[in-house]
Length: 203
Image 1 (cartoon, rainbow, N blue to C red):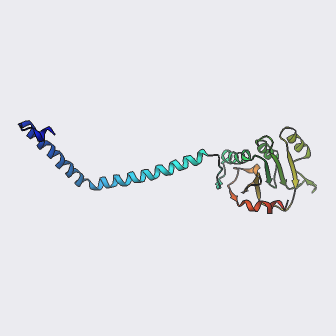
Image 2 (image 1 turned 180 degrees about the vertical axis):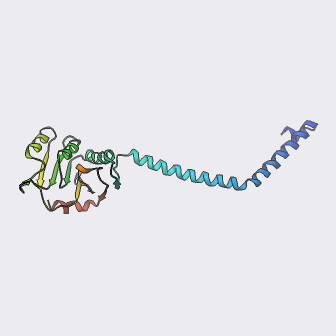
Image 3 (image 1 turned 135 degrees about the vertical axis):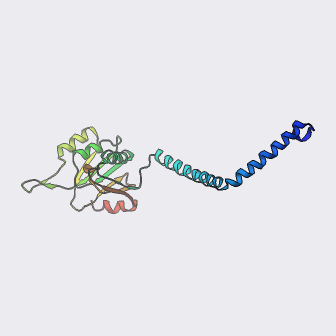
């Protein structure tokens, strides 16, 4: 501002230097227009990426379990943690339909909240003599109930797939018996809750 008002030699030199700076800046922008354009594109992409990352982190912070997914062989910890989180989410009741319920399965169900009732629908299996033999004995059921009431075990032979029903509101189809989680590749999906009543009528 002073260089435009003052009439000295120094003021003239400053005015010339300012004009030179603007000319060089214009030349730089013109010669690097493609770089500037790319930087603008990168900035826009970064804003979009930041928004996606924020949304992902927000989803991870919530206690809502995923709707569907696949666990691969060897993901023992991840598979167990997923199912245990589902079990912990139940506030009133858990209904597990699984033809191969073992003590390992009961150990997972013991992670439930206090007061949540558990119903297990499973199959009887044949022993070496061909006699029906449940994998969970009445003694096992009694021991579980003495510490984590209440557990009811029912035996049915009309189910093939595994289902997990939480509070009679959420229905999951699980592609592996709970005792085998992470040992082989399996998928899971959250199903329409309207199917719950239809499943219960077959128990």
